[in-house]
Image (cartoon, rainbow, N blue to C red; front, side, top):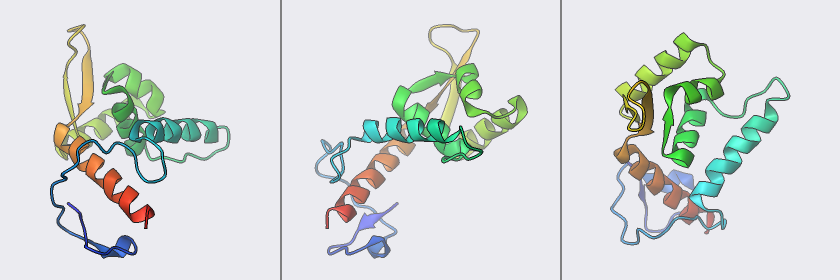
Length: 139
């Protein structure tokens, strides 16, 4: 994990340890954009860029942003928006689950389907990086 050094001037001043935050209420960086609005904006820009043969986000990043924005998704919905083959999408899910980024479980509303959600530890780590990003940009 990352730690902000006492006097950061750029991204190279980050060290490999991150101390716990005192202020958990920070949900926006110094650019004035909330965490959620950045997720939505990233997905919107990525979708708009698909009219060209160009994708802004990797498949992993797109799935993570969708899950950050929606909390959980049914596997079929996530697969349809991924633009991957069925096999490639399931390989992606296995890799992300093996790395502790997501977890797959039976859907709470419909036991015939499975849903995916981000691991809470990953969400906490991602949130901390967002806060670090905001602190770096404010200086």
